[in-house]
Image 1 (cartoon, rainbow, N blue to C red):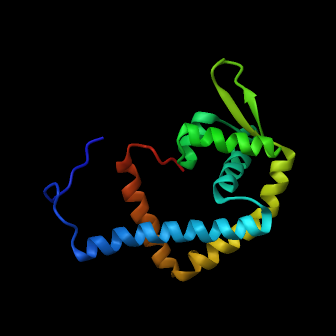
Image 2 (image 1 turned 180 degrees about the vertical axis):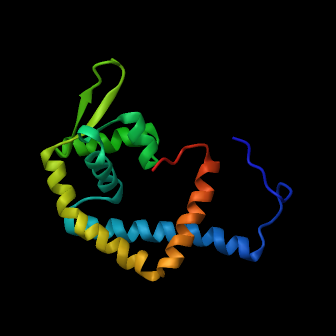
Image 3 (image 1 turned 120 degrees about the vertical axis):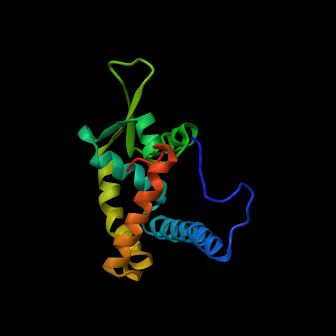
Length: 161
C-alpha cells in the first residue's frame, strides 16, 4: 500500500498534527485500559475477549472463520490463536473444522460464551458510554464517525467492521 502525503517524507509534524495524532493514541490506550479493568473486575473478561464473543454472537450461525475473525478484531493470526485457545479452554467458544477446507477452522460461540457475553454487555456498554460517547454531542459523534470513515479505506482493508 503506497501512502501519499502533501508533505515531504521526514517532515516534522506541526503542533496541531502532533496533538491530533498523540491524542488518538493516548485516548485509545486509556480507553482500552479502563474498559479492560472494568470488564476484568466485574466479569473476568478482557476487551479483546469481549470483542471476539460479540462478533461471534452477531455472525451467521454464531461462528466465523479464524482468518475473518483475525482481520475483524485486528489481531495477528498468532494473537488470535492464543486468544481463541484461552476462550476455548474457558468453554466460551469452540473450534469447528471447516467441511470444505481441511486447513480452515471456525470459532463458534458456545452457550457459556453467550451467557458470559450477556453478563458483560451491560458493563461494557455503560463504560463505552461513560468514558467516550457521553463526552461528545451527537454532532461531534457524527464528525468522529465521518473522520474514521475517511481514514479506514486508506489502510488497505485491514480494518473491517
